[in-house]
Image 1 (spheres, rainbow over the protein chains, first blue to last red):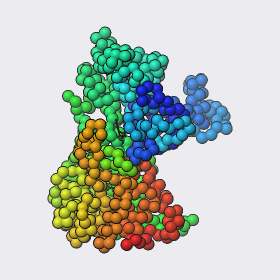
Image 2 (cartoon, rainbow over the protein chains, first blue to last red; image 1 turned 180 degrees about the vertical axis):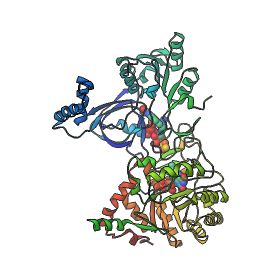
Image 3 (cartoon, protein in one colour; image 1 turned 180 degrees about the horizontal axis):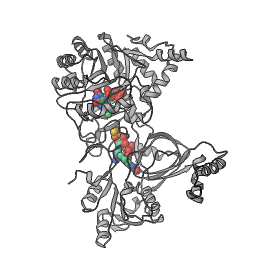
Image 4 (cartoon, rainbow over the protein chains, first blue to last red; image 1 turned 135 degrees about the horizontal axis):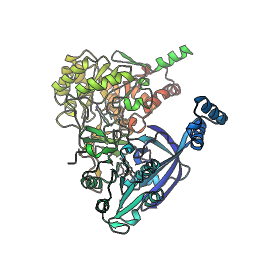
Length: 294
Length: 311
Ligand SMILES: Cc1cc2nc3c(=O)[nH]c(=O)nc-3n(C[C@H](O)[C@H](O)[C@H](O)COP(=O)(O)OP(=O)(O)OC[C@H]3O[C@@H](n4cnc5c(N)ncnc54)[C@H](O)[C@@H]3O)c2cc1C
Ligand SMILES: Cc1cc2nc3c(=O)[nH]c(=O)nc-3n(C[C@H](O)[C@H](O)[C@H](O)COP(=O)(O)O)c2cc1C
Ligand code: FES
C-alpha cells in the first residue's frame, strides 16, 4: 500500500451515471488486477474504495533504459553483468532517479455524495489516494481458457485482468451483464484487445436478453469449456455464477462497507471455510472453494 | 546536535502509570490491529505505544456486516470485538509483534463476565511485552457485556477489583461516555485500585438507509467516533480529570497536534488516536512530528508542564 497524490488526466461520463477517470502519478503499489484504491472525497470522512480498471506504468531512470534495452535486444545479448551494467549506466548518464510513474484508470458509478463529488472533479486536480489495496486475482490459476464475468460496474477490473492474460498468451472469453445498453461499459475496449466478448442485458437492448448466467450456460451448451472463471459484480450475480458453475473453479471479487481498506479495523470481515477473512486485505478476491455458499 | 535532540525528546515524553513514553501519542484499540498494517507504512516504534484490538477469552467473529457507516466528520462501527481469542493472541500475534515493535504495548481486554476479564488478564499478565492493561468496559457493540460494565459504578468497580487481583501491571479502565455521570464511574474504578482511566470509547449511535428504510448497520446500532466526537471527549476527560488523582488517557476524535494539546490541557497524561488512523494511516506519525512546532507556537516547553492546565 502507498498513500499518493494522483493528478486527474481525464474524467468523463461513458455510460448512464458511469464515469471513467484517468489519473497520473506513482502507481507502483498497484501490482495485480482485481486490486482497488481508496480515494479521499470532498466532504466524506471515509475514503471510497474503487477497483483498478487499468494501469499503465511508465518507468524512468536506469530502470527505463534497462527495460528499453531488454525490449530492443533481449536480455541475452548482455550476457555478462559487467556489459549490461556499462551499457545501462552509459545510457542512463543524465537520467534522474528511478521513478515508477504511470496512469491508473477507474470506472465509477455515481450512487451517493462521494461518487458525485468525484464526478465533479476536473483535469489537473489532485486526489489523495491509497493505492495497491487488496490481493487481486490469482492469474497463475487461469489455465488456457479463462472465463471473465463482469456485472455492471463490476466489469471494471476485467480490463486489466484481460490485458495481463493476453500478455501471457491466453485469450480470455468475457461475459458482461448490464441492465440495459445505456449501462454498457468496456465491451469495446475488451474486444479491441482481442477478447471474445459476449453481452447479456436484462431488457435485451444489446446482446442476449437475460443475465450473465444465461449467457454462460448458452456458451457451455455450445460446447465451450473453461479452465477458470473470474467474476466481479453485485452479490446476487456472484451467487448465481457460483451456483451455475459446478465443476469449474473460480475466483470471485467481493464488496463490503469499509472503514480503512487496508486491514486495520475488522470492519469488512467475511466468514469463509478458512475462518474469518477481511474483504479489504485478504480479499477482495476469494476462491470459489473458500466460500460458505453450499 | 546530540543534546538538542535529547531535549526535543524530553519535551514530548510523559510518564503513564510509571512507564515512560517517548511521546504521548498512542494508537487506539480496534483501529491499529496488531500494528502490522501500519508497520508496512512507517516505523511504528515512533509511537508512544499502541493499544491492540480488544481481546476476549474465546475467538469472536463479531457482528454481521455491514458494520461500518459514515457520519458527518466521523463514522459508526459495530465490529463487535472480532478477535482471535487470548490463546491465539499469545501464541501468534504477540511473537509476531515482538519482531516489529520494541516498546511496552497496551493490552486492550474485553469480556462478558467479571471472570472473563480476570481470566484474559491472568493469561496476558505473563507476557513481558505488555506494559499496561486497558480494560474495555465500554464497548457498545456487544450484547450482555462490554458497555454494560461501564454504565454501572458497582459493576465497573467489580471488574476493576477482579483484574487488579490477577496482575501487577498497571490497569487502565476504559470508560464509555454513554452515562449520566462519567466522573462517578471513574471514581468507582479509582477506589478499587485502577491505576489510570482512559476515555472515551464510542458514542452509541445509529443511521438509517433512506432507500431501504432499515438501519444501515446490521447490528442496528453502532459506536460513533472520529473528529465529530472530539468536543464530547474533551468534556468527559475534563470531568474525569477533575474527579480522580490517577492519570487519565484522553481519546475521541483526536485529529491533529492541536487536538493532542487540547486533550492534555483538559487533564490527559497521554492521548490516543482511533478512527483517524483508518482514513489517514500516517496520522499518528505526522502528529508526533508536528508536536514540537505546535508547542513552540503555543509557548509550551514540555508537554508534562501543561497536563490539566485547563482544570
Ligand atoms: C473492493 C471494492 C471495489 C469497488 N469498486 C468499484 C468500482 O470499480 N466502481 C464503482 O462504481 N464502485 C465500486 N465500489 C463501490 C463503491 O465503493 C461505492 O459505490 C461508493 O463507495 C459509494 O460512495 P458514495 O459516497 O457515492 O455513496 P454513499 O452511499 O453516500 O456512501 C456512504 C458510505 O457507504 C459506503 N458504500 C456505499 N456503497 C458501497 C458499496 N457498494 N460498497 C462499499 N461501500 C459502499 C461508502 O464508501 C461510504 O462510506 C467498490 C467497492 C468495494 C468494496
Ligand atoms: C473500528 C473500530 C474498532 C474499535 N474497537 C475497539 C476495541 O476493540 N476495544 C476498545 O476498547 N475500543 C475500540 N474502539 C474504540 C476506539 O478505541 C476509541 O475509543 C474510539 O473510537 C474513540 O476514539 P476516536 O474518535 O479517535 O476513534 C474501536 C473503534 C473503532 C472505530
Ligand atoms: S475495511 Fe478495515 S479491515 Fe477491511
